[in-house]
Image (tube, rainbow, N blue to C red; front, side, top):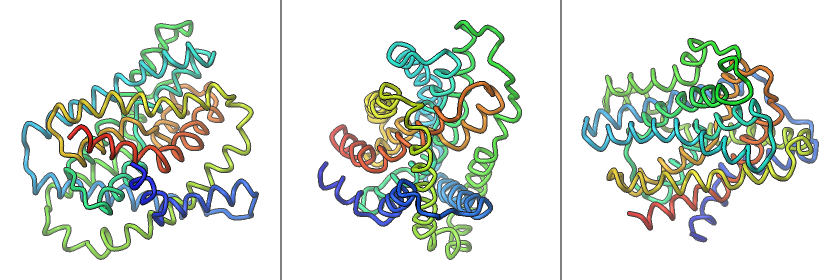
Length: 320
């Protein structure tokens, strides 16, 4: 595990994230234009979705693939229940805040998934290409669960101003699923055609994107650390471990490879900071982004990059 952690921590993508984090904490005047940041995110989502679709085309439909999709959906729907219970028992957050945070910890961070995929590739550990389809399946169920949880608490209006069409058609979901389908249809021949764009620049773009993420995370921590409080911050550190302990045995049970178990574990242990915050702004506008966004991006995301991913890979190796 120490070897895995050292290899991950000394990778360019992690070091660029640390550079952005330190620059933000030191209040260095460095910002990315919004259009460039969105462009980098679109590239990463389209690239990983397309390559995942190619992986499915090469692999073909089988029981393990279907089982992985079902497992992802169940985990995404079930983990927010655990997160909501822990938040209400340990942090004292009001129900609407707890529901908003819980939704983030059932959904997924596609960038954490990409980082884990790259770490596995660097280590020479193979994984199923269709895991990107699992990632797409795990985006939305957590949002629905969180809104249903809120119905059973003191807020009885059915979950705020939820616009289900807007949630289901979130841009990151549409891009990921659409690129995945294109990859399935075009297969390896299609990948060979776009490899100079989709494959070769991928790691460099990921480094620049993580530099921007470090800047965003650092600013969020500097501005909202007092709002979170120690018990909420602690949740952002231990909830990924709870989710990983649940997901890893499920991955082994359904027959995923070592890399597949690691990615399912990473997906379950990650916290959304793109799709779910956008959905929460629509569904629960009263919930404070200073809590749920800073926690997922400023606490859990760095934890997973530095410690979580090597831990999940080591756990997957032990189980497989």
